[in-house]
Length: 468
Ligand SMILES: *Cc1c(COP(=O)(O)O)cnc(C)c1O
Image 1 (cartoon, rainbow, N blue to C red):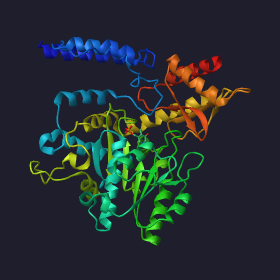
Image 2: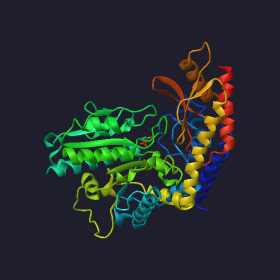
Image 3: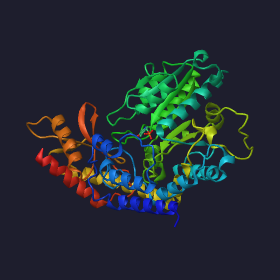
Image 4: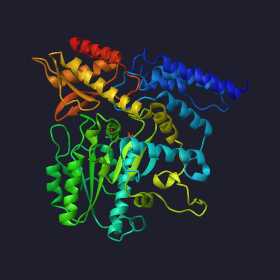
């Protein structure tokens, strides 16, 4: 075997060992930054180190320094894991090392993007005419969507905003809910809109934008308007009422002559649309002008991959691309970079392709439904304990838990249980603040989680509670 073969073979063994051990180790990291810096740091030497030795060292550090997000009992954030086919495809992507910005750079990756894009629209029932971009995550999918919105609305009034810039562009009113994801605000900042002027629409007890409140807001605006809705609240999993929101917007267009764009952040919620049982939650999403989602969350592909869908391909492309003399586009093929902020880029649609192909439509629906069943089971088992209160309607994969005991401060108790569970290591869950109350937040999004993982985790949580 060549040295290269030996290296890759050894690395494969180390990766397989990591994954084999993952459900037996503490989910939390057991090394801190200082220890990791001591193991891996030191000034860079003049002479190189053999690659196999580097991999051994990294693998040893990973045992203590990683959080077992790829494993079955990480419920802290909606992170998903990696389906076997998706992980294997990602290895191929690294081996191929394709710059997939332009079709001529990689006909294979560009074509796989097209196929994966069509499959994604089909499984989520989004219009086949939507343009698609594969980006690093939902933050950039939100960014791209809002850039497309700005292009589209400015063009309506004859302004080429990419040429003249915001200084000479007409004002655009941004409307978002009180609970839209903070990365929508990040995107607004990066795009130069700022966040101070955003009109915030009130939400209901589940964190859903209130369509009646949106109607009141739209009655006060004129000109160009972007409405940011969301499919899947990060705390409760609840969906904004997209059909009602689209109706309210259509009314405002008809009666007040405004130009509008409806953006939906569906980072994890869009995947409900892939399940016949859950699709009702996202009803109306096909009426959005843009939709952002993540594949590295609930589709369970490795980091990183977000996806933007746009109902106006010309505006999508217009916001993202600029011709360069040395990039000669083909007329028949789509150049991926025209739909994303990046130029050179990884072939991140390939793991998406492999994930979808390995699951099939039924397998995808089953994986999504299974995670939701696990979430419901968490709520059911925990809810039997008199000191536990489930704060949300468990409509999707999210469970909000609060611990209450006579004579104890519930916020303090809840925070203590969250910290205790994190330290105990059987599973990992985060804390949150829900409508003024401290809560434990459980997100189920990993393909490999089983019912016994849920039971083990419930026992660990209740054990910590009894000792708190
Ligand atoms: C995770 C998330 C985002 C941000 O996605 P990244 O992939 O982390 O960039 C945006 N919106 C919602 C609702 C999310 O859950």
